[in-house]
Length: 186
Image (cartoon, rainbow, N blue to C red; front, top):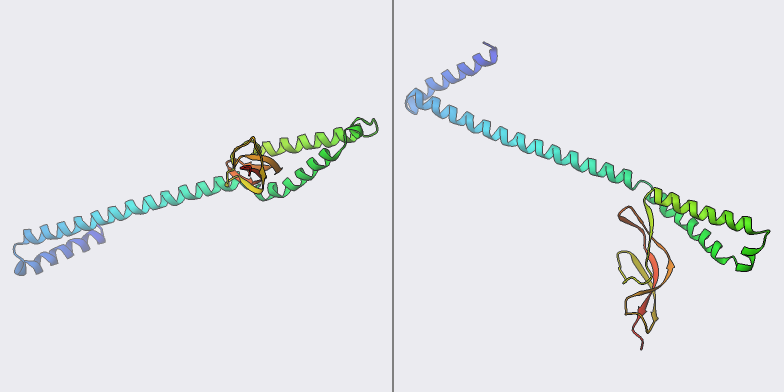
């Protein structure tokens, strides 16, 4: 028998002896002590279950935060590099058709276009996608209306012009599209 078991037995025996004169028979005292110990055990089990559940919740929350951190780690960098993509696109759009056909500039134009395609490919590889806006209904979660344009052949609230493309990174908005929205003709 261990010292701990001896101490419990001595305590139980002392409780029985003390309670014999006060509360009734020793069996009643032992039964009361057993009931109290069973209640303590039930309370300890319940607290253990709560602690285990809390630990699992913390673990799940940390796993989700870690997965989000991995998935969206490039958000700030992607947002910054979008301005480079916009400038490259504007530069390509600004090249007149006659210069595109000039033999001296064909290589430069082809190189710039290849760079633009490669940039879009890298964006897609990392979950950054341009979303279409023209023809869609204005969604304040994805679009930022810059102007209202009176248009007879489009319903009010329909996007008729895109000034700056909008982008998503995975399922989150990276940058809203800057758009012109149709308004009812006066």
